[in-house]
Image (cartoon, rainbow, N blue to C red; front, side):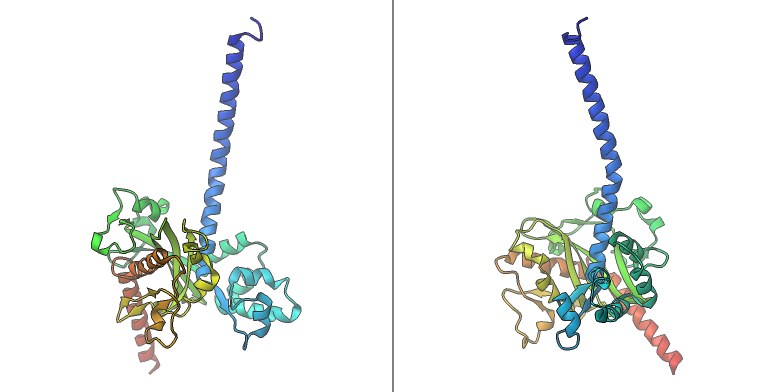
Length: 332
């Protein structure tokens, strides 16, 4: 049979297609694990950035403020700048890192060479400063991984879309616009020398064009906001997309998230008047993005409320108060 016959051409074409298909499949399978790992590391970095940042001001920290050209500098920026900064600034940078994570962790982090190693060290279950816990939103209790559906393979985002696992949110409570939620969510305790330094909560809710995924960090009092960070959304750049603007995010620092035990964050139209008696709860709006701003407000208040992490936060506050009372009695 001629090599140019239709039969030979078909056989060669089919064989080539099979080889290509197998090659693509092998590459896809090989890359999947790496892609999942990169996605996990990126999310962990966002968790860390929501809580682990130093604050400088022009008066007290003039040199550092001038060097970084910012009043708020992430742990990653501090560690990266450490070896590049002028000699006279290095002790101050080391002190800032130590103030965030404690002396022992700071020493370990300073020895690491790249961002991946730093993230892995921060989340190391044995000695990392960021501890992951799973919470039952219904009871507010911490749940062992062994009791989760699928155990180590449990994923809250997937569970929220799984008809067998999801919890439907009644319309009157669905202020975040998500319709369903997972039964269990991970929270992240950021510790310094074994003590709670901040608590990072996942948040999810509707903006104008998209479902927005992020993290909210609270101070140890579990009432004051430390930071907010969105890592995934499809809002309009320059409008709703300004949720990514560091200047806008910075104003959340120190806001009081509760009033008489109820979530009280208020993202207003325009700018907050410092003399407003409720300014401690208010955030500047997003120009031209009112619906996104309302979405952020509703999202934060939903997850801080009784339908989100409210019960968990209440129990954690009660435990901290009980611990202080015991220490006070022992001290007296």
